Image 1 (tube, helix red, strand yellow):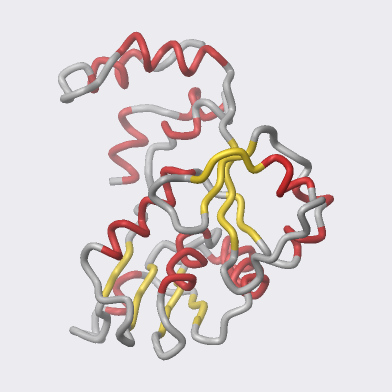
Image 2: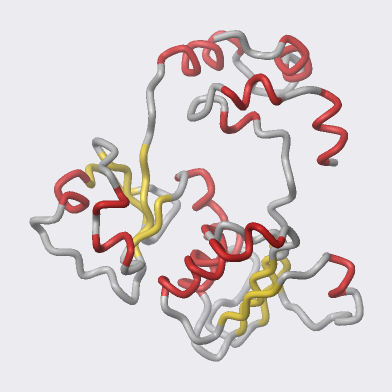
Length: 210
């Protein structure tokens, strides 16, 4: 795998960065699959493929599990019923950020500003109480449908899906207790899953996203 030289050079001085390990894990082809259960629908049949392949709990997530293999999720009725969401374990760390900064037992208003396809929104919705409000926003119109579909499958009444530019919320000064921003990124985190993402990476694209 030919990782971008400019990317590798830019990370060499970062604390804790191990170039050899970074290259080795990308060349290994190892794929780690994890899911997050829906606490409102999580009673999975012990005989299901998901239950049988759930091998280890994600330490920083209340509902996250690593799978021993990657099943064909689109063939699983539980997937379409919103019983679980397929999500990178690293993205589930948002739970810790919320638990350590917000009193989740109180009614709060949360804005997920860059929400599609819905992983972080469904996670947030699983943590807030029924008196809370989640505004799940996506600026790119073409991505709103998948966001709305995933929110609907998750099955919550305290979520509103919007399609607005970030500046449209500027009039709501101090309205939200929490704002989550998973900003557009350069895509380097996709290298292991999608080799084409390597060719799309460039310093210019990083600047564009910024």
